[in-house]
Every structure is written in C-alpha cells, then in structure tokens.
Length: 462
Image (cartoon, rainbow, N blue to C red; front, side):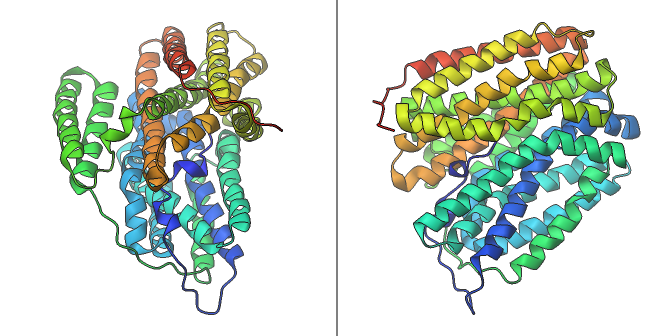
C-alpha cells in the first residue's frame, strides 16, 4: 500500500523554519526527500519476491524468511512513534542525513551478510534508519516550500514516489534477483543513498526545535511488539515465554501511556469512535495487503515454480493501479465524505479475498495475477478516506501525533500479519493460504461493518 503524507508525524513540519545561507534551491530538498522516501518504501516491498532465493542461499526455513521481512517492518513501525520528535530535536536535515547514512551502511551489510542471523540483524538497523528517514524527509520537503500552493505540489510529488516504490517493488525485486542475485536488492540502495547525501550538502538546513520524548513508552512498545512477533513465529516453549514477556511489557506500555506527560500513543485519542475505527480499518487493510503479497510471493515461486522475474511481473496488475486508485479515492472522499469509499473499498477487498480462495496449485498464473487486482483496488480505495476521517476527527494541534499513531499501527499490523500467515502456510501451504485469506476477509468485513456506522457527510458540488 501507499504511504499517505498525512500519515507521517507532521509535528516536525509545521513549526520548523529554514536558515539556508545563500538560499539554496528547494528543488534539491524535494529531490533528496523524494529519493529517501522512495528508498524506504521500496525496501518494504522489494524483498518479498527475493525470499525463496534468500532461503535457498542462507537457509533458515519459513521462520527465517518471516524475520527477514518483519525485522525491518517492526523496527520501522515501532520507532516511527518517536522519530518525529527526534527529527525536531536534531533538525530535519541533520536527522535525514543521519538516517540515510545508517540506512545505506545497513543495506551494504544486508548485501554482504554471510548468514541469516547477520541479514536479520542488518534488516533491524535498516528499519531503525527508515523510521528516521520517513518523517525527516517529509519535514525537509515541507520546510523548503513556505508557499502553501507550491508546498502542496511538492508533498504530492513526495507521496507519488512512495506509491511508485510500492507498485514497482515486487517487479524490481524480481528483475534484480534474476539479473544478478538477491543481494542486488540491497546493493542498489548504495548509490541512491550516496546521491541523497550529496544533495543534502546543498539543501536547506533546518533549525533544531525542542520536542519531548517518551522513552519508557517507546522501549515498552518495542519490547511488546518484538516479543509478540517472536511468539507467533517461533511458537513452542520459547514462543510461550515470549508471549509472557509480551503480556507483561504490553501492560507496562499501557500504564506508561496512561500516566506519562508526553505519551507516544495518547490513549485518549481512541475515545473518539472515528479515530478508533480509522486505526482498526488501517490495521485490517495492512494485514490483508502485505500478508497476501508475502504469501503469494511464495506461492508463485514455490508452488507454481515461477522465477523471481515472472513472480514480480505477476504482481504488476495488482500494484500498478494503486496510485491511480488512491487519487480517485481522495476525490470520492472529498465529494461524498469518507464513509462511502471506506465501506465500498473494504467490501471490494473482501470480495477479492473470497475470489482468491478458489486459487489452487493448478490455477494459471495469469489468472491469479488478475484475481489479485480486486484486493488491491479495495485497499487503495480505503486508505485515503480513512486517513481523512481520522484527520477530521482530531484537533489541528494533534493531527501530526494522530497521523503518526495511524501509520505506526498500519505498519505493525502488516508485520504481525506476515508473522501469522507465514506460520499458517508453514504447516501446509494450500490449507494455510486459504485460512489466511479467510482470516483477512473476516477482519475487513468486521471493520467494514464498523465503518458503516461512521457519521456520513453530505456530498459537495463537483
């Protein structure tokens, strides 16, 4: 799925001012920000098609492949709760440079990894750096354009880079893996990272701003999510211990957030029904989309025997329409209010998931590629309206905080979905795939029903 710019921590953008000696061109900031956002979005999706090649090269079985994806996703999601404040404190341009440098070095470590533990460790570092890059890149772009009209166009271009990265990720992964090796999907980040750092030398500089950090909340969130994911993937006695750790740290997290002066997840937000429904819907959409891409990446290669390139191309009909559908969804939400496209989108996605239940080992790959399209259309139709609904439901001064919570919830849900669905298919691919699709359909059906109860809004004139 795309990452909407409204989903990022805008606290880093509304207050900061620029102090650029010599008035450097804002186009440099836009180019640098767009490249970085594209890079971190690409790394969230490019790995899926390369998973069978990684497993063949480094071993580790299904649980190892799940960690290759989730190590990045969970670190990215959990730390995104605090990195907006970090960007304020360090200055967006400095935070962005630091995040890009660490991300580039971690990408090199991924490409050079001698074994699966080293790869997973480097993926964690990549996720940490990506959590810094994303809000800082948006802050850099917004600060470079003080004029609202020009800023809106710049942010739209920034968001389009993420949409393109998500759409092209599976194809790029297939091309790079087929042309060279799975390590190429990480090495390709190196020249892009170097280009960003060179652009930052001439991009506008950001001022440092005071911003509170909730370290106890951040630490307990990371421990909870990591332990919960470990429990799902590893299972057995070790998984039971991890589940216990997740319960204890989760309780500590809620206690800290309820009493802390500057919580990373203000629990009071969820007293508003619209906020609660928007977060739940965003989580359900992420579970369905990211988990299905993960499962069908394995299906195309391990069940149907396609190569990485063919498997990547099989996702192109699904991902290629996402950016266009996002634009249409935004216009529908503006004209009819968010409820209608949210409800329609979720039920289209449910229908798509039910259609995929018919897929078997002998289903022609082109037909499977077509059957994946309704799920993508439904998810893409849902995300912009749910974002608009949440932003409308919170005061303007809390919009950035609420957006960060929503984005983190979506990423966490996607990571946990991959953990659960990967475990299900490991016990028998065909049965596990169908059970995964059914669970995703039930989740979206439930959130679709709750979305229907949101307050409607009269249509505006075109």
